[in-house]
Image (cartoon, rainbow, N blue to C red; front, side, top):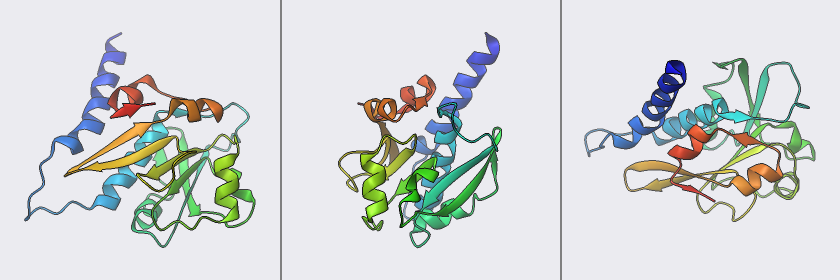
Length: 176
């Protein structure tokens, strides 16, 4: 019981600490690095269906030209729990379902592969910046003033057979 309590407190500290840090003109926050850290931690609180490959590699797809994609690329090879991250470009062909986590930014081209991924029920956590797409996202990053927050779409997660931890949902701004 004590271990669970410590894990809950650690989760709150992990996600809430960046939110309570005040930025000023003199202290610049590397927003893409902060978003990448959030996304890395989202994966730690996510369970994919059992049919997922067992090679302990989490395939993360992002636009390598975007600042967020570049920040995610710096996490390539990093271990999160039992999984090592493999960061690769968003596919432009039909193999978008090979991603377990897809990150869509304002600069992400709406290729046929991305459209197919959004329409599919593939077990992919789609993380989107606010106002990038209207539907299909599981987690949406939202900037409110100096704070970075996130929304969770449990209906979409359920449709994709993805289970998000209740700890993660408690930290979300909005759970739809």
